[in-house]
Length: 375
Image (cartoon, rainbow, N blue to C red; front, side, top):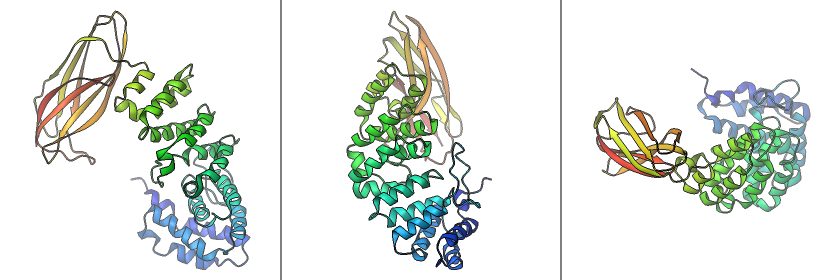
């Protein structure tokens, strides 16, 4: 069994941090820092552990942030370069997981020293990430913080460029939401435009995830961006845009599908047949789908299916599943089949009763067929 992530923040990391802080701060109480930061650590989850270390830093560091910043800067270790997993604490200094607590210290203590804080976060992200810490400054004053991100988007270091994108995501998982960018992402889109053809896949992946965040609140805007970015696009940009639009594609958003060439299909007939009208829980729903072309040209098809699950109150809840892409030849018929397991999973509670299967082609419903789930 894989070791829980929380165990990567341990007493050894705290001792390593203390060793470097002690080198650069004459009045540092290393043993007190270690004992307070590590006390009861095994009972804490990951975020609680990183917060504990930050809180202990606040207690044991000087009140003067400029002095504290100098200690932090001097304690930094070897940058990650291209090896994203190389960060650790060694004789050169601090890198890796410990940086999260150090960046959080800057986020809490550095608001009155913006230039210094931005310098520290820029250097820290080269050794791990500062994507959570930068959000405190964007929340506090986005107008003053954004110029730094624009500069970072042009930096030679891929980790710094990624911070411009990842740190500005409106809905970053495990990070604070940025309401100003949820409401109006124009400033974020400006950054993404600068980074969409970045040489680093690490950066481009972040751009795609950021745009996917934006799509949850501004689907039409992102669909327009997709259409613009796909014009004369190379394979890497196409891959980026497809990943950025994954939620819109899954939801069958018409304008987004059209940007990828999936227009409403011209068909004569579509037929859904369920060969297991009663499905015993633990077994599979089995179905076939056929579609007859009414076009004299080949048509690209994006085929998804939706299971409308029975809920406890008798209503149904839809869940979209990817099926396949296909090219329907002119005036031809496409026949495909599917087995969908109806078995226990951690993310869904199943209830007996009538369910339905719906087939979507290029975002348009081709009809439904009912089946009964027996528990």
